[in-house]
Image (spheres, rainbow, N blue to C red):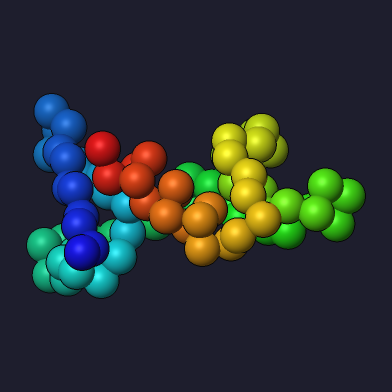
Length: 76
C-alpha cells in the first residue's frame, strides 16, 4: 500500500516524499528538491542512498530495497 505523509510548517509550506497519490499542483505552486540520490557504486557493488552532502545513508544489493527504505524514511 502506498502512503503519502504531507506535513505543513507554521508558515503554511508543505513537504512530503513526492509521489502522485495527491495532485499537489492543485493546492499551489510546487518547489521540488531531491532529498537523496540512489546510484550504483562500481567500487562497493551496492546501490547507495546518499543525501545532498554525499553521505551514504543506506545501501543494498537491491535498488528496490533502497527505494523502499527511502520512502519509509521520508514518510514518517
